[in-house]
Length: 442
Ligand SMILES: Cc1ncc(COP(=O)(O)O)c(C=O)c1O
Image (cartoon, rainbow, N blue to C red):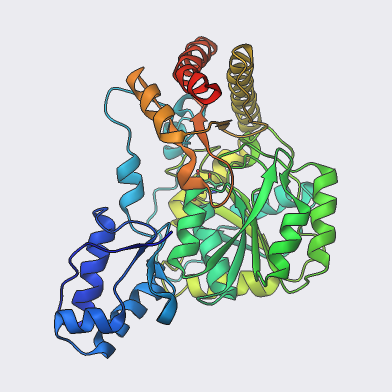
């Protein structure tokens, strides 16, 4: 239900009015679902013309902060794309941080040996945007995973790649099919681009085909799928699900398929693609989880048009991804020691997921985590559990920021979680859930 707003909106120009509303949202005084005053009411209150207020509301709408208009009213979005969420969710100091979703620093290659091997010559304007060595290595990887590698771009991480593909093909107001639950960054990005997220339910094998069909029938112009290491659920596509999804997608040939392979070789699941035979597609493979978040290079395979549009737009802004980063990634990929290192990381994460899931099962708690760095635990009431766990020294994530319509849960990042930690965490969680279940059964 929408609640009418109590917050005092101020300003005598459209810019100041929209800034005042944005300020209210950022500070949490204007909350998701709250209804802004009608254009006429606010204009009368602020003594400005209705056109001024309408312009302010429109600016907020285009930026994804509010939705609706006219008689339906203007309502604060559930996920306004502001920089507040991460800050609000930053775990208090002193807690064991299992909330971040990142890799174990000990599982990443050491940088120093590679830095010493950089040529040390400053790059210059006019150098080729992409390093040949990186593109060749990327093409080899993509090909061996059954992904066409005729056109490859280099971008700054998975999220950057996703944004560039969305910008290349979609316009504000377009619908995007997204997994539900889904990575916060993707949901925020979709809102920030003033696109409309259409949820697609998932299970351990990835998106559910019937749900995808429903979303595409509603007019979705793009579909963002995480083939493995789905965040937060750990889902990974299997061959059967991939075939079902491809069958659905075949009925919608214009839909842009975006594959978010953010964890790549450390996912603990094979690379499976839906891209074969599609007209508009991109598979974005990031090194953030496998080689380190600060390297933040992604290689993107795609159809010629999509890759050309991405590169064309990129050439007007960042121009290229730093050649220093490209060289480092190429060196790491070419190093004969790297496959062993990545396999060790993938195995370690798999063991850590398994340790937690099994420890939880011993307490009768169901959890999911087929691949990736996280385990998802369904709970009835997220905030209470997160607070109870914080009191016991654990920082974990409430699932709310990942969900659209899906059921509540909590996310535990297991990348650094030892077997001993997993046992303690499971026992603490069992205790945190106990009074709640008694109350429920009462
Ligand atoms: C599903 C998913 N996609 C993308 C990203 C971001 O990747 P990158 O750092 O390469 O932008 C993350 C980060 O955790 C993620 O979980």
